[in-house]
Image (cartoon, rainbow, N blue to C red; front, side, top):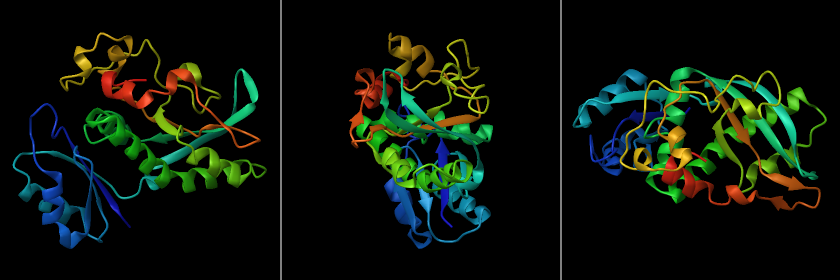
Length: 253
């Protein structure tokens, strides 16, 4: 079973820098794959966490917070699923999931330099690639869970919605909750105790940057498929066409 490693607070703003590709080469005997430039690795060879931590610590030129996740699917609880219609055109619907995760995993996912937003910080294209990898990993688990709860839902439709370019993950936003299970997430009044300093988001004057530079500590993540019609046409909201660019610029969308 693959092990996902997240190194927190590395290669950001010129501090605690190292070359992830070189580290992966040094750990070739463990079949380590580097993902991006922010300290995310997949370890495909079976190894104990104690040995892997020792291997990483001995090769890094600084102390780093190392988080390991044995299986993303086993680290989350499926909360709910909805067939969400487009508000202004009910002929379009999308798959909408919510999962509960541990606070530390949420922090690593949403706030860490090696996490979801961290990938977009590196480059919009890198963020899109990370988003695609995440959805590819989670889709089988989400689809199976949705079918268990709603036997009448079409698996093929779920897979198509989740495969569209606009499919995405984000923190659960309370105003957009569709039931009690996906409620209790982030809202505009939320203020985090910790703020992100990366040389870009804290200097943006955009309203989104006010939220983007925060590091919320929550536990709910929403995963959205793309809106699709019966004719297999995708609908994209105008304000979401530059989503990757917006996260790169402001840390938020």
